[in-house]
Every structure is written in structure tokens, then in C-alpha cells.
Length: 146
Image (tube, rainbow, N blue to C red):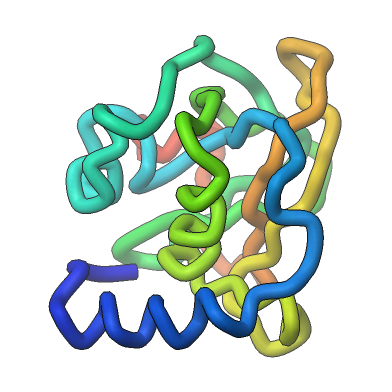
């Protein structure tokens, strides 16, 4: 998860040509880490112009400290997040790229995008789950409170 250089944009264009799967479902996305307001990913992707904030939300699971960013894994816990509507469906593919999720190769992706029912509010949303073990859980469940 890094900056959008010219080389990264070229890789994105190649990646976007290979995307498969349900990309256009009208579901909000829940962000729990660097894509939250005020965090570096939110600024890098210029999300202030591309999403509509719906409110705070909670996701079932455990938040893990992966160093520069967090990861969400299944488990007994509650993770603090923000819920957003996307202004266009192309953004979902860009988020997949940012999160290193390849729908054609989920087993080798760092994160996997899944449709889940949120704890609060009780509605469905896209959420990115870390595709690895959690060595350092964040007890508060909030990336901003680590």
C-alpha cells in the first residue's frame, strides 16, 4: 500500500484489465485503517472527492497491527471503522489494487474483499480482510487508538 506513481498507475491499468467478479454491486465500503478520514491512504486516493461518508460503523473481528497499516481477521472482537458510499464503481477496483486484492487470485492476495453484515449499523458492506495470521492484535479494535 503506497504512493500512486506513474509506474503504479500503469500496473493498475494492467490489473484492471484482468479483474473479474462482482464489482458493481451497490454496497458501501467500510474502512478501518489507512483509508479512514485523516489517514494517508484517504489523501493518496483523494477519497474526499470520491466517496460520501455515511457514519461510523463496527465490524466483527480482530484488528492486527501489520506495521504501516492494519489488517482485519476473523475473531471475537469488534473493530471501529467508517462507512462510505462510492461515487463510482471504478473506485472499487482501485481500492482492490490499493489493498493488494486480486479477485482472480484471492489465495495469493494480501487482503480479500468480502461482503459482510456489519455489527453496527446492521447492514451489509464490502470489507477487506487480511489474508494472513495476526501476530499483534490491537486491543482497542481502533487503528487510531493503537
